[in-house]
Length: 170
Image 1 (tube, helix red, strand yellow):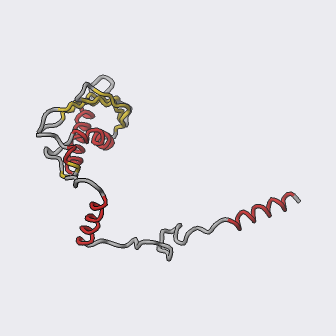
Image 2 (cartoon, rainbow, N blue to C red; image 1 turned 180 degrees about the vertical axis):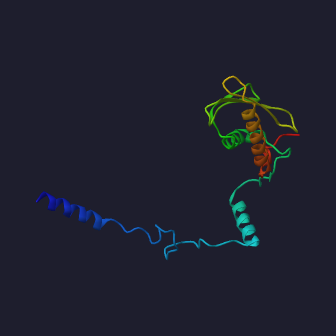
Image 3 (tube, rainbow, N blue to C red; image 1 turned 120 degrees about the horizontal axis):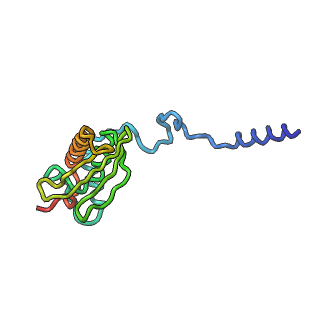
């Protein structure tokens, strides 16, 4: 008797469950879709879309451009994460080093400690980075790779257009 009640309740629960929307499982178009997912705007469509988005934001238009000197100080945290990841390292901690610097403690995939010190310097250089890797500070190969990947990441981020207010002053 108890088994019959359990089966009846389970059947009622399954029967009352709402139907998933059409195409939800397979990501296929449905009559319920509000927008055409295959729409690719032309250049004039894209300009019209951007113009309407700009009109919706009050205030002066923000100027965006790549970094004036190829790199930006504000990109350091992102570049350390990116460059460290490419160099097969994970960031443990970050601490301030005075007003114009950071000290990052990383660990390599081989469980080697790495300390990365980055200081802000005047344009056009923007930053200086020094690495110390290995239990005894003897892993020059890890240091070179991290510094190389950091520089590539800083240049990659610097090539992206950002508000010019994030760039370095003259």
